[in-house]
Length: 318
Ligand SMILES: NC(=O)c1ccc[n+]([C@@H]2O[C@H](COP(=O)([O-])OP(=O)(O)OC[C@H]3O[C@@H](n4cnc5c(N)ncnc54)[C@H](O)[C@@H]3O)[C@@H](O)[C@H]2O)c1
Image (tube, rainbow, N blue to C red; front, side, top):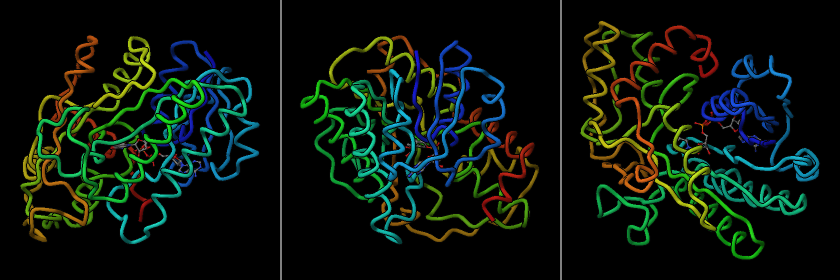
């Protein structure tokens, strides 16, 4: 297969690219390197079946031409940070919804009709059903990020109906692992490197969250694409456990051998749109035979080990 991966220089995208290449596929990535890194492509660049295009999803001509001769689109490029929506209200709309529309139009122009989309568990807002299944009552949105991703899902479903597309929509919990560049483990590690005696924590530390290791996430996506052939295939992806932010702090501090004073900003939510309890029902993907190989604790330790060996990633965010 010849895959087109938007956001292929990012955390999840570059891991996916390595896997697709290892399976003998050809891969073209399309990325503007806004949050992705050339360093994440060092393995891929050694492979003759890999090519990369430095392009933006808003350059529609370039996007359309770049997609030529591919078979399947993984659309992962996005503004992936859920936290700052209210600081720039149009960013999520542009990067997550309109950019998705541009990808769909470029596909249509190239007569492509298979797309996998990285959505998010944030689309459920503060669901009353926990663990939250894919068919939970229609969610009330609490973040611009979640709203923009749900709108992206809506466009994809409409293209399936209107233009004969087939789609795989993945609602991820937070992903951990090698090449991780944003999220709470990154923030805590970064703080503790500078000030091992103090840790500032958003919220009261009792927020409950679920996480998934990046290779498990990739296994799940590939399993669903292989085994589920509905017109629109929607899957939650997560582990069957959750932890409190305070559990995660304990694991991180134990691994790093530090014992900081912890300063909480307070409140049940760390930021506007933060969900105090995210835990997805993943029976649907598990019914296809997939199960995660790593626990949340193991995923956090793997993430720390990556950051310890790759401190340059921290420098890029300073
Ligand atoms: N990391 C998580 O925990 C998580 C959880 C749920 C959903 N997701 C989703 O998974 C996807 C990948 O997330 P990630 O953590 O790898 O993020 P990331 O920021 O590492 O990767 C996003 C990539 O998209 C590229 N990009 C962004 N805007 C672009 C544009 N306009 N044109 C071209 N390229 C562009 C960036 O340069 C980057 O390489 C995103 O869609 C994100 O919303 C991630």
